[in-house]
Image (cartoon, rainbow, N blue to C red):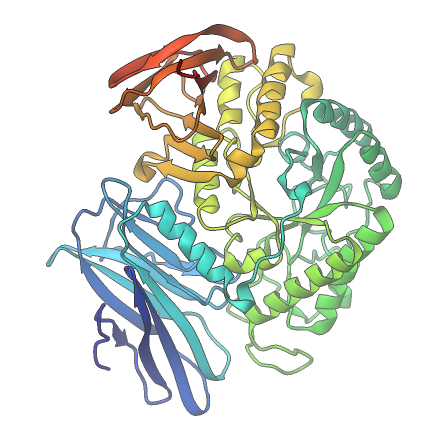
Length: 588
C-alpha cells in the first residue's frame, strides 16, 4: 500500500483475503483523523494488520499509557511488550510528552471495544520513535467489513489537554456515549474490603456506618463475603449470589439507610464457582473452566445474560440497595479453548460484542428500576466503552501506597470526562503517626475519597484528621472534580496537581518541589502532601498581599497573617499534611 500523506502511515500484514484502505478525513490545528477500512466480497477471518509510522525523537521525555503507573519512560524497539486494549481493558491511546509536559504526539483509536495493540518505541539506529496500532491481534470471528478511525494530535499544549480531548472525542461516537453520573457517584465511600475481607459482621458494620456518616461518608460498598460464609478468599461459591452470611439482607440495608448511608453490593460478574448451583445449570456455557479462580460465564449465551441481569435487578428490587461494584469484567475474554462461532445457542460469535450487549442490558434494566443507581468499575476496566455502563471508576488496588493511588487517580481522570474517579481505599497501620496516616488521605483528594479503616479503633486525632479532610473535600468538591485539572511532571509521578475554577485554585504538593505561583483565582489552597514542613512559591510577577491561614492535618488553625507574594521566592511554614489558605487582600 502507498504511504498515506501527512504521517506516512505504512500497512503491514496485508493479504489477498481482504483489502485495507486508509483515508485522511480531516486535518485541523494539528489534529489529523484517518479512517481505516477492512473489506472483502465475502466473509473473512481477519488476521493481524499493523499501521506504523515514525516521528523524530525530538524533545520527548516520556510516554504516557493509561495504566502503566510509575513506568512512563521511553521504551526501545526491542522491548516487545505491547499495550493491549479492548472493551474491558485499558484504552486505545498513547501520548508522547516533552520535557515541559507539553504534548508531542498523541494517537488514539476510535474502536475501544475490539482488541488492539499499541506502542511507541525508540529505534536507536535512526533516533526515531516508531508508533503503531495493530488490529485483530487475538483470534477473531469471521466478518465482512470493519471500520475504525485513527486520531493523531501534534498540538503544542499541555499533554493532559490532548488526553482530555481524546476522551471527549470518544464520547461523540454513538457506541461509546457515556451514561450520566448521579450525585451518589460523587460522595465519599466507606469500603469493607481491606479491614474485613470476607469476615463481615453486620453489627460492627452498622456501628462503622454511624461513625463514617458523622465524618462525611455517604456510601458503603459491601465487598466480598456477604454472599458466603466461606472465608478462603476464593470464588468457589460465586454464581448464585444468595446472602448466605446476611440472610436478612433487606433489614440490614434498611438499618444502613438509617445511619444516613447508602449501600452498594460487590459482585464478581464473570465467575461461576464450581460449588454453586449455577455451575450445574450452565455447564457447557463457559468461556473457560480452567481459570485459576473459577469458571467464566460465556455472555454470548442469552440465558447467561438473563441470569446475570436477573441477579442485579432482583437485588435492586428485593433489598432496596443503591448500587453495585461489578468486578472482574476484564476476565470476559477469548481463552485458548473459546470457540468463536455463532452457533449451539450462542447469539454472538464475538466475546467483546457480547460483553457490550450484556453490560448495556444490565444498565438499561437497572436504570428502569432506579435511575440514580451507581455502578463502580475498577482499573483496568475504566476505558471509554466502560463509561457507557459505569459512573464510578476506581483506582486499582494499592493499599498503603499513597503515591500509586495519586498516580492512578490522575491517569484515569485525564481520560474519563465527567465520570466520577474514585481513589483506591486509603488504609494504613494503626500505629503510624497521624500526620503520616494523613498522607494516605490527602493523596486521594483530587478524586473521590474511599476509606477502608476500622473506625471504631481509630484514635481521636485520627478521626479528627479524617473528618477535616473529608469535610474539606465535600466543601470544595466542585473545584476538585470539575475544575481545570493540570497534573505536572508525569515521570516524577505527578508531584504537583492543580484544579482551578474562577473562584478557587487548589494545589496539591506531594514532593519537595517549588510551586510556580500563578494567580488563577483570588482564593488559593495549597495542600502540603509531603513530609517537609514548608512550601516554596516562585513568582515572576508582583501579586501583592494575601491573607494566609495555616492549618495542621487535624484542621486546627496554627497561624494567621498577611503574606506578600512578589517577584522571587517565598517560603511558607506549614505542618506535614497541613493546609495553606491564601486569599487576595483587597487593594486600597
